[in-house]
Structures are given as C-alpha cells and as structure tokens.
Image (cartoon, rainbow, N blue to C red):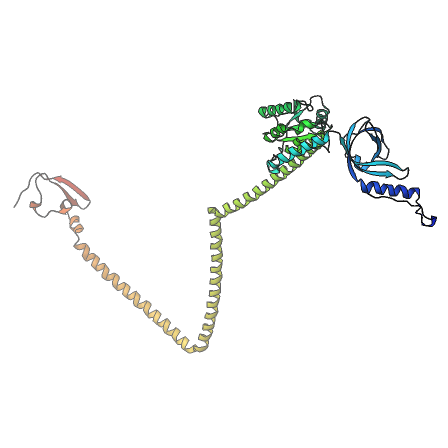
Length: 454
C-alpha cells in the first residue's frame, strides 16, 4: 500500500501535480496494487462500438462500475451479452485518464455459473484422458468411400439444415439417415446414447456425425456426459463430432475419431465435391488408359521377343542357320582350293621352266624317236600275239566241240536222267520211276514199266 503525506511547507518545496499526472498516478496505484481480479456482476448499458470494442456497466444491488472489453479479447466470447445477463469476468482495475473515471478492463467473460461447469468439464476430461479414451492410437480412420452418413442431432435444428445443404451442394449422391435426438436438456444424454446404439445395431451407414449448433456452455453440456463419452468410444462405426462453434470444445469432441469445428465443416469433411469426384474419375480414367496402353505395348514387346526366340529355336531356323554355315564353309573351301590350285599351277610353271632349262633338246628328240620306235614295235608284237592266240583258241574250240555231249546227241544219241543225274546202270532205277531223256532239241519224260538186266 502506498500512502501520500502532505505537510504545510513553503511554496518552494511543494510538489504540484497536473490533472493528467494525478490520473496517471492513480491509474498506476490501482493497476499495481489491485491487479487482476474475478468479478461476478449483472451487465447493463451494453454498447458495441463500431471499432469492435465493448463498453458496459457491471453492477450488483448496491453499486456499479464502468467496464470495457476490447476487440482482441471479446472475439473469444461465444455469445454477445445482453442487458441483465449475469456474468463472470476476469479483469484488471484501472482508470480512464481522459475523464478520471475508475473502470475495469475485462480480459475474459463467461456466463455466471460456467465456473463450476468448467471445473466438472476439466475433471472429466482429465479422468477420461488418463483412461486412454483420447489416445490417437484408438481413433478409427474414416472410410475412403462414404456412401451413407448417419446424423445424430435434432430433427428440427439448424445443424441438420446446414449439413443437408452442404451435402446437397457437394455430394448429392450421398445418402443421409437421421437418428433424431434431443441435443439440450437433462434427457438429451440418454437420447443421444440410444441413437448411437440404434445406429451401431442397424449398421446401415458408413460413418456417424454427432452434431448440433452453437450455444452456451449449459446448452452444450449434454455432450460432456461421461456415459455418452464412453458410448462414443465403444462405437463400432467411426464418429465425427461437430458440436457448437469453432471455439466450443466438448468431451465428445475429444473422444470422437474426428472433430469438426462446425456442422457445415463436418459435412465438408464427410463429402467429396462432385466436381472433384468427376475430375478424379477423369484422372483415373486417363491413368487406366495409359496403364492399359503401356501394358499392351509391353505385352507386344514381350510377344515379339518370344516370337524371335521361338523362331530362333524353330527347326527351319536351325536348318537355315546350318545351310548358311555350309554355304560359308563351301565358299571357304572353294576359295582354299582356288588358292591351292593357283599355288600348284605357279609351282608347276616354275618346275616346267626349270625342267626346260636343264633338259637338252637333243636328248629329248632321241628319247622321242626311241619312244616312237618302241611304240611301233610294241604294236606289231601285240598284233602278232593276238593273231596267234586267236588261232590257238579256234583249235581248242573245235576240239572241245568234237568231244562235247551235245555233238553226240546231234548224232542221234540221248542221255537218260533221274532227278537230273545221269543213269548209266539199270540198278539206278526202279519200276514206276519217272525218268527224263535229253535229246538234241528237248526232253522226253517216261515212266519205267520194265527193267531188263544183261
């Protein structure tokens, strides 16, 4: 506490203040000594200036004080206060120097009674978090394709209207099933739990949306129910929670698989823009066409390679290859023979040249004469020998003809044969035997009827 003491002293030692300095000093004392406070009061004379600042009076049944809440602070207040509202504020005590008015500068404002609710909220949040209900590992991923959405909300609330409007614009093909429930009041938690159980039992949707519009902490309190939180955590269907406005957080938001700031934002998350869908389908169609084209090209290349390998292994190809090898060998052989023949001919010419150069012409002429003489003498001797042999052969032929059995047969004789053996005795035949008689111009077949021995 700062005290100011004033004494009667000469004018030369007086500390004279201006009004501005006095107000500034008073402001310093108020802000430094009292500081930040919490205050419960009723609001009146509320004015929202064009600058965004709020000016109002806080009062109880015996006193009042001016207050101001600047734009940077009041933007976090969910519901604008109105005349007569009971509120709880966190403020610093100050002084408006220009007029010397004592006032409060409010930093935070909430409805009176929210303090106890917030304590209960934080206690339940701490409890469920320690149990692992908020763990990311327990969150279920949303399906890639969502064809049917289940909405748990009031059938007459603005949240349902916002959700349907967004889905109609972005994804008209998506089906909606509404599980109606109260979203405010004492019976709301039980109705919400029953709606969750019904949706899981029917299993007719791909995902559930738990939602309602904005309101005070008291209005949204049913979504902070512990039983509802455990039911959300136990749901077999993935759940998106979109309760209140962006600044509102409920226990259901923390337990749900996905939290959306508003019902409309939840509809945006759960729907796919039709134009984007058509674009995606077009892109997938192009990718599919490219993939098919590439697959066909690859298949054609593989077919060509396999055909080439098959042709290479085909007997006709092997025969053609062998024919080519044979032709190549024949060409090499012919070329070799031509080279060898040319070399031999060249060598022969060299030897002939050497022979002609070393052999005298006279010796060659005499050798030729001797050769001619010897040839003539040999020819004469051969003719004489041939005539002699012919004569000798003629005599032997005549002698052979004279003793030939055929000549005997020609003179009227015959030869008797049995099984092609000559019969020269009666002992070689028996009565009944068949015998053949050979004469000059043929054979006579007879049967033995009588044998006479001498």
